[in-house]
Each structure stands twice: as C-alpha cells, then as structure tokens.
Image (cartoon, rainbow over the protein chains, first blue to last red):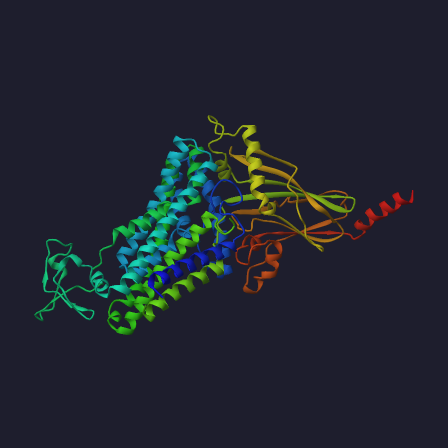
Length: 353
Length: 239
C-alpha cells in the first residue's frame, strides 16, 4: 500500500476515533447555561475517584473563598495579599484538573525531546499567555465593548476552535517530521537531530552515517563553541542533548493554543472584580493564578522532559533504546494530532450533527 | 515503515483512546454554586409537578448579568426574562437537572410552563440570580411508595446543593409523606456502579460525575395515598 494511502487511512481512523469518543458525550460543549464555557480536557484523574472528588470539593471551596476575597478587597486594599495568595493556590490546584494544555505540552516536550529548562520555560510562557489572554479578553470585550456574558462565551468558543486548529497543525507538523521524513529520508533525519544543518558543508553519506568535510560557521546558527573537541584528531558534532535550542515556531504554536483558551474561572473572577470596582485587583489575582498554573504545568513538563531525556542521554546510543526513542516520539506526535482532532470534533459537534 | 514506527503509532493511538474512553472529556470543575429549594406537588394521589427555586452565587451572577442594563450594570426586567428563557431552554437537553426515580422508573418532565428570574440582594450588597420554574410530570406518577429525587448537573459545571432549611417541601395532598435527605456516599471503586449512573442519565459512566456529588432526597408516601384517589373515583362512579 502506498504511503499516501496508509497515511490517509491513519487520518481517517483518527477522525473516526475522535468522532466515536465525541458521540459518547451527550452533553453539548456549551454547557447547561449560556454563560461560561466548561473547562475541557482529558480526565484520566477520574480513575482515582477519591482523589478526584477531593479535588472537586477543594475547587468549590476555593471558588467561595475567591468570591469573599474579591469582595474584601473592595473595602480594604490590604486584602490584596490574601487574594493573590489564594489565586496562586487556586491556579496550582486548578491546573491539576482537566485542561490547561497539559496533555499537549507534555506530549510535545516528550516527542521533541526538550531539555528541562526548555520544558519549564515553555510551561511558564504558555500559562502566563493564558492569563494575559483572559485579562485582555475581559478588558476589551467587557470593559470597552460591554459584551454580555453570552456573547463573551460565544467568542471564547470560537477561540477554542482556533486553539484546536493550532494543535492539529502542530500535530500534523510533528507527525510529518517524525514519521514521513524519518521514513523517507534517514539522512535528513539524522542531520535534523544534530540541529546544525546549516553548518554541515559537503557531507558524505554512507548508509545512514556521514562525515562532515567542512564546517561553515558563518551561514549557520552554530558557533565554534558548539563543537566538541575530544582531541582525537576529529571534529565531533554535539549530541542532541547539547543542541538544545527551543524550536520557537513549534513553541509559539503551543503558547498560542494555550493563550486562546482563557480559563473560565479567571474570566468570572475578572468580571466580578470589575463589578465590585476592583478590576486591577482582579488582574493581579489572575496573574497569580497564571503563575500557579505555570507551576503545575511546569512540574509536569519537567517530568516529561526527564522521561524524554532517559531515552536520549547515554542510553540513546544503544540500538534497542534508540527504537524506544522512536516509539516515544512517534506515539506522542500522534497523540497530539489525535487530541487536537478529538477536541476539534467536539467543538464542531461533528458527531451529533 | 519500520516496526518501531508502527508500534509507536499504535501506542499513541491506544493510549489516547484509553484516556478518552476512561474519563471522557472530563469537565468536572464547577464554576457556579447553586442552592436549590424544591417543592413536590401532589394532587389526587399523584405527583404532578416539581417546583424549583435555584439561587446562583454572587460571583457567577455578576458574570451572567454583565453587559446588561447599560449604566447600572443590572439587568432590566425584560432582560431578566430573556435570561430566564435562555436558561430554561438550555436546561431542556439536560432534563432540567431534575431526576425523580420512582418504582416505575425515571419520571419524564415536560418543559416548564412557569418560569422567571429575579435578582435578590445579599447582606454584602451583591446580587444573586434566582431562577424559578415548575416542571409538570408527564405523566403524573403515583405518589404512594418510595421516590428518590436528585437534583444535580451531570457534568458538574454547576455544583448544586439542596438548601438545608427549605430544600424540600411537599405541597398539595401529600401531608402524610415524609422526606429524608441523604448526603452523597463516600467514593470507593466499588461504588462506581455503571448501572446506577446510566439509569439516572444517558451519559456513559465516568462522564456523569455530578451524580456522585449529589444529595438524594428520599420521599416516602404511604401506599394508601394511591388508594385515596381510587376510592374518590369509585365514589364518583357510584353516584
């Protein structure tokens, strides 16, 4: 079977998978009331009912405390500190639940074998972008344009569709990179791993291994310090672990996808703060929430990065584990694609028509 | 395609499928706390309607009411009416969150004939949105025997709690009925009874999380209540 046919089959299968899962959700994505989208995401945590329930109850408790805290700030500016602290804790806890781009971000960190530092950086930027997104949305839509909550909700719904599209795009890009290119162009794949494409001039290729004849530092992003001198008379390219620049094109995809999904809780706090006349306090609270989310998502990203590192590092040089590396990369690239498709299907309501 | 590649693709698909199938797209973060007061209306030995008063928390009320009523940020009566209509219409697909299980099964509810929304001020000076509606049972259910009433949002977007004082009342001819409030049982793996969950709503197990958090009101009416309506009819026929 040709590769096109095979890939078409996979894409069709993934859409069918997404649609089946969507069909099992009888509830509409809009939620029961017109205002405020429900958070969505994957809930493997629901497999631990006691923990899940504790978390839900804790979140409900937090909601009530947040309401009290925002109200308190109206009377006493010093109450801003408890509000910020509470919001931070709320962010930490909330991010453990479904949503907040955790699945996609961790899958990406694993699939692209990001370093710890990059994973953490990405998590922070994404979480803060999400907080800023919520603040801008309320500032513009509510403060300036006096949009109703229903109109606001429709707008966030459309943003979510955009976000899903970004995730699908990212997934497609990564699948292409990991599967297609690897399948067809082993050499290019190896060179991509080295991340120094521009530096290799006149490489000779021999059955998957190559030797660079010269290195051109001027037209590449590499620097002389990137090369490893083992004093063995040969120049060595740094291993993938050392070439650790974050691919900002993909990273912006993730940041953008997260920023387009403002947290409903943040929106509610911001609007309430505005009604109470303490909008800027609401902004501070939501930024604190973003930091809390960053912490939780960052922790997960660090975990994912460590797992990814496990397959590269010293272990990566062994052929068996190199296979494991391939499996992980491909599996998670597909996971991102399928996740995006499933969420897109849900939002576009494909199954129920 | 190499074996590793194939395995990778299968692993990714399987893992995601497992995650999706297990929890579904879980949305169990409540964004609104609703206090529920309900009244069961019994006439001629049958439960004919359920009247409910829901009060939304101040923070969510501010969110819902925003953008309405230009200057004062408070919705006008007409805007409140349209809010009420919108909520009721939205709730139709969710069975109005009201589940009454009797011996004969789950009661079917007709769309409410009467509904309204109002804003009440709390002690702190905030507004709380109140939604009032009455859903008739179609058909009415014989009152005698035991009934379980649960009012909850299966997706748990709304955390509904039955008011401690006014949570449940019986109005009409049900003077001899008693009500007991049962709090949700602590969760354990054995309690995830797919049968019970699916009985109450059409959602697959796991997606119906709100049911686990919901209180149950047990309504016990003497069986003679049914007989009362029959004897009335016999009396009429006799004349």
